[in-house]
Amino acid sequence: MSGIVTGPIRARRALALCVSVAALLLCAGKARADGFHYRNLMVGDRAIGFGGAYVALADDTAGLFYNPAGAPYSKELAAATVNVLSRSQVQYQDFFPDGGSLHSTSSGLVPSYFGIMRVSEACACAFGFSIAVNDFLSERQLDDSQFLTPGGSVDEYLSGDVDRRLYNVGPSFGMKLGNSGWSWGVTLYGSYRDMRESRTIGGKATRATQDGATERLNVQTSYRIEDTQLGARPVLGLQYRGNSVSFGAVVARDFGFRRDYRYFYRSSRNLVTQNDDGSNKPEAVLDIEADSRSPARQHYPWQTSIGAALQPYRQWFLSAQVDHYFKVDQGAVASGSADSPPVTRQFKAVDNFSLGSEYVASPQVSLRAAVYTDYSNADVADAGVFERRESIDLVGFSLGGTYRDNTREYKLGFYYSRGDGKGTLGDLGELNFSGASVVDARASNLTLLFGAEL
Image (cartoon, rainbow, N blue to C red):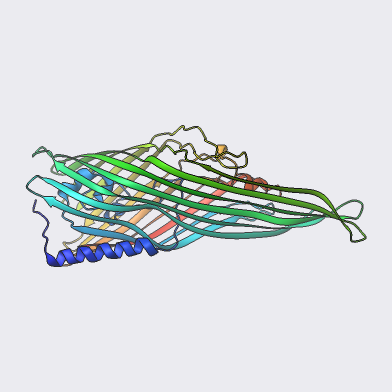
């Protein structure tokens, strides 16, 4: 293997790429992801083209994220991937009592991945550094519904704002084990998670009584969650490369070290009876609020990934992978109020599968296609007070391609997934004038991506 060519020109290009990626991280716009899936945003253009089936390959800068054991085989100096358009939609079917659905749609520019690497032939090893954005959500929602009831009418609304970020930043090291075909590698990410969620449901209902009076009910319930976590994500990888086949295995886990969780809740109800003479008689008034904080740390699952790649023909590659996420049976920790959602949650055990292929049409052009799963780690049945959960198993596919000129590579592609399941907004559904708490839900995600390598 030849080492990577470095020089003033390529160094300047690498610096320009670093600045560009940093700017995107600071000013990226809306997109959608959630805490109920492990493949919210996939990283690495070639890896995405394989549907995430990359632990047996991992021979570019994105391999620092998937399997650092492949780093010694990389020929990339630096690369970045930007999801130039990410559009997602979730529909809560029959959420409102009149059969109306609750919709959540978001789209925008999303930074995905940046990696830089140095390969040394002297030690048959590689050093790298990468930034991976695995979750990036900015959601704005406003739905309303008006409908008639026996003897009256209902006019209600639901609004919601959600901002979620997950950044992994850190160094990597990989080394060949002599000429045996084996290599190993490790990446140590520092992670930053930040989530801000606020929702309000409210409205008014009128109903005529038997004595000719009119009852008027005004309801508004709102909550806000602020959650910041600092942690680490170590990734340990192993890889074997033969003449036309390779195998890879990875063990990884997220660890939380510090957390600041804050929850604010307020609910008010006002029932007034208007008599025939126009006078108003207050019947019931309710005004409750809660404000609590907690440092309780969330536990995250161990992840194991096993993959195999085959080159049956000179121009054709196949790769398959299984990712297993272990169950987290962590008891729910309350934030100090009976009206607040739990600070911690459980995770179901999940197996995801991916199968991808690459066809090298010419020295300048490569094409990729894959299918993959993104199953939910949540169970809506045990959702806490005002806790949003979605149990939607997604199935997707990806298409991508690479064009090479004399100095660099340009990569384009997209991935799309959709699925059906259940969704809940916790007690917001029950406050929905006798609406359902758990409803059928449908989700779809489309992401277009662009990547460049120096």
